[in-house]
Length: 391
Image: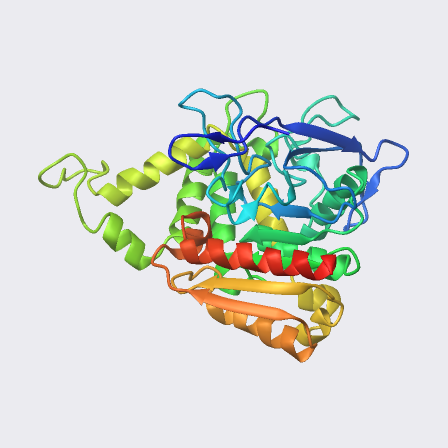
């Protein structure tokens, strides 16, 4: 266990952490995917924080969003410029997910490019990266891979599965696929299925990648990569993570490093410069094919189709978990009405459900930003669930 340290004004941190890997589904015992194909061996990158208690009752699984990874908290080195985990504000000693009380696990999803098996991984049949030969995976496949990891860690029941956005899709899938394993879940800024609007944005982003002349039908790993297409895809996605109010406050119509219009196609406005910067940074750390695969998996996700024959109420009839559902007022990607529909279906099944819509100007990404109210909600909910199972 890492020693808790003070780091860069973030309060106590879990300190220096290590990315680990778990490989399973070795041939001839490959993992069978929802599309019927077999995949193996499969590797998941993961990190853990805190310690598993003697009766293994304090495990919390964090599931990440589209471009996230297993590095949810802590630092890979103790230099002052070390980059913290993507949820450092929420995970650590005394924080919303308190690592002095809980054993926290976060794994990189199947299909990603941050240490887990995905289209950029080596195909054992050819020795070259899979590219588009990688099978299309689903949120269910991602959860099945996580279940193999949880079994490997010796955890029979999970105190809570916590995730926002696509991580929230995984949390819901966990509750319906493994109802006897999940004691509680905290789906944040999420949905039971993508709307046509969300699918449309994802498709435009995918088309931006596939229109890049360097994409080469996904087999670009030996040469130039489709960086321009991926950058545009990220710009499209980033717009959906923000809100009109957040963009007004942050940028307005302010010009970038100039006093007048350029009268050409340079980045005149601050918002243009910001989006170009976000796109350029993204291509340094993410794989274009993984973007295609993960967004497609999210678009396919529909618990009413998978578990409810079209009925959200019937889908949640499988669940046994206690739920804390949180939405944000300015989230127009996964708006509150979608969370309310879930809550209504949960209540009709007599589930233990808490719901909160948090006033926030920052759009879909609000769950990733500092929020005292969200921290208190998560901390109180986890404490209640843990105390109840200990009685």
